[in-house]
Image (cartoon, rainbow, N blue to C red; front, side, top):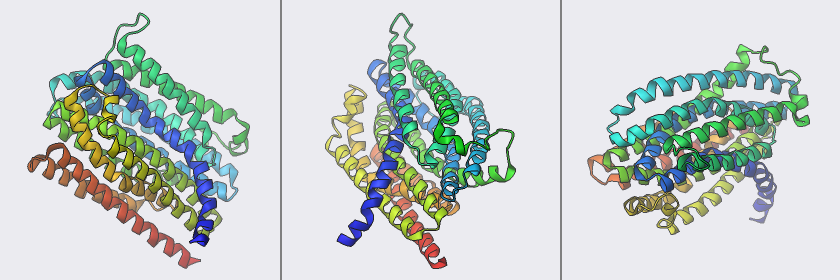
Length: 452
């Protein structure tokens, strides 16, 4: 036991050093939505909060498609850095930036001319839909600067520079809260905007974050040797396909999971407004711990890709296993907090007792699935670092759409267990995903060890 601990300790330290800034940075994506929910819930009421739930359930799917494609850059950068092939990193960044700009424009069109046209036909409360439409339109525009920011973020993190994006994300979230309260309440002579106010604050925040991160990367001494071959005119079909071969399956992986939770939000909306608002509270808190766990996953991707580039399978194994240890410890703590504070946490968002009662029940279920959620997201990160993305994509599809969502509908809607039944299905999907991804990791690692 002492030997095992001494083997893992250096990896615990190095993974935490790399992961903690990424955790904070990843958390920034969800804190924007969390801040929106708290501001609207406290200052606008239950119907606007349900509107935020409806919008976030649809927008998050689109956002994760874009983020997933941008994540295709990170393992490639980590592998090339492990080989000391610095010039290739700049070429990969140029290709990724162009891909993500094009992707963001396509996703904006999808939101503006797709989701906004069908939102009236989702069997939701008319009052909720009326509040949701302008908010969704503004979030749709914000996808463009968000993906530009994430391109530079993934580039820096792939090279092991994780603190810079963290600082930008923290500053951006502070700005988002200040602007959100100002616009929603109508401070300093500004007319109260309601839900539209958090849409404007998010758009402004993401635009400034993209500008700051881009300027930092292009001007910092840290990245000069990597950017010697950076030029948007150096776009290569081969490099673009390499990025998309990883990024597109990653986008699908995220989409399958997030869309399952979004489908659950729509199911909750058919049950009632209070249930939909409660779902938003519980899923917001669960998404926050998920994004923090995805910070450990991102660190696992970087370390795995770097060790793979060096062809050091023993260190790869130790580093990957330590990532599982760390995320399980973190998610166990989150589970305990969710269960012990299930009655108190919803008060952060609202004072509506009917909403709080339902949210408290859902948080207990959320507590139980924390370990599954953490294990599956780290499993995806490790496999991504190994360049194994296609089979994990099939696994996530089967877990969430083949099992989780159908069970959620059957138990929650058909059998009448309502919100608790819907969330039981989601928990089952996470469990299946975690187990199958871990088995895939073990099989892939054994194959690599045998090849040596």
